[in-house]
Length: 516
Image 1 (cartoon, one colour):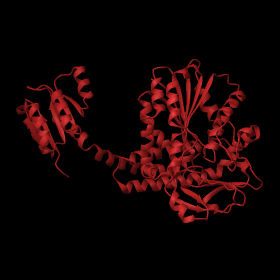
Image 2 (cartoon, rainbow, N blue to C red; image 1 turned 90 degrees about the vertical axis):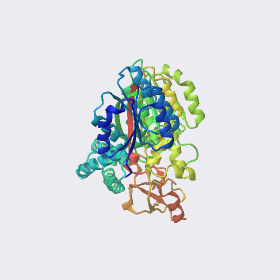
Image 3 (cartoon, one colour; image 1 turned 180 degrees about the horizontal axis):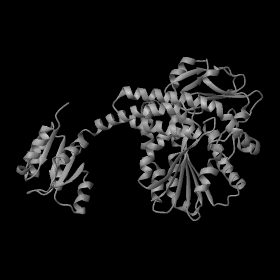
Image 4 (cartoon, rainbow, N blue to C red; image 1 turned 120 degrees about the vertical axis):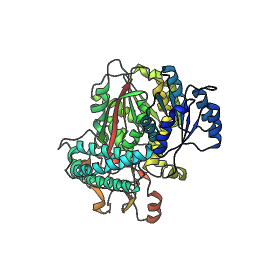
């Protein structure tokens, strides 16, 4: 490892020789100068890892020197050292993007700690993360093998997401491999758990978690306060880890009151889960009560064209006398319209905003080679979501009204999972094309690789034809037909899909926020 090079600029350098020696004994190469002009010239011609900069010097001040050094190399970390404790100076220095601010007289250990924080931060965080995960590994293993209930599964998944994000900071491929194996084991156990319990939950034979069809009643309507506009924002296909990625952007403007999760119904697909959310009904009940609003997979036409109608029917059924609006954003122009109209929505009790970007990204992942490169794994998928949200009309619109008293409930309809292992399925021409679930007649499949419902009503689903059955892919599997099997396996492998059973698809965020 190269010796870190420190430039220390102070007109009283003679009195700091003992501190210079202390740092040199700690393994730093320290070069000293007594004025800002020489410092600016020095960084033009020499490699410098950190600058320690006095504020009060003859000639040009520390702040002026800071600005000139940043012009030469904006990436050099600069630590301001000063006797001046005035708030204005601190604000100006921080605004100039210094890395730290120390008040004289400085202790040698204080300077050393600052240098470690700047130069060794990534390595130290990675080492601590690896060590902490090694300690947590056993606890997670025990939790997975203690027959967790649906609440404990939500807690386990939150912890896995936490460690996945922490592992992103680690440079240890070995520990990342261990983590991925544990996450895979968790999904294996979760599939067994869902297989044992799903039908009992859906048919009301056992106590059940919050599902798509009671999300509005259990999580959204209770958040409404008299005289305070509430925004229910549904970002389509938003996984819990993607929420954690955009959480800091929300936290800048809003206070997060509750970070919770709920279970998407099966199939974890938009036409089922989102229609269930807005109707407050299971798909089998929607088809029965509102056949004009329901289309089965094989039928022509849009499957989510009547969400607002279903939502208003739910309001009627629950006797909710509310002034409401419903906005769906499918394209950038829709987002601009939302941005322009956002203040008018403050007159309503409840505003529903459905934003489709993430789902489009998931589907486009298999259509566009550029996106295959941009979203090749979970880390890049999260990064793309973060970048989108930060610059989105939705973020701009919310910031526009952040000075008003509002409540926000943010949720999604389902998540997605990166598929890796193919499973062969044979079906007739009416069988659906989704890679994570199929429904049709005479399905032929390996029963070990799917959860099957020969009677769709057991899963709260319609029966489009006699002998219809549904199958749902487990973990990271995807369902392919024998025709052109190898071509489709290679084409869809490592793409993000949804519709099946995995922690990433089923356990999804519901977040309550308010303005600060």
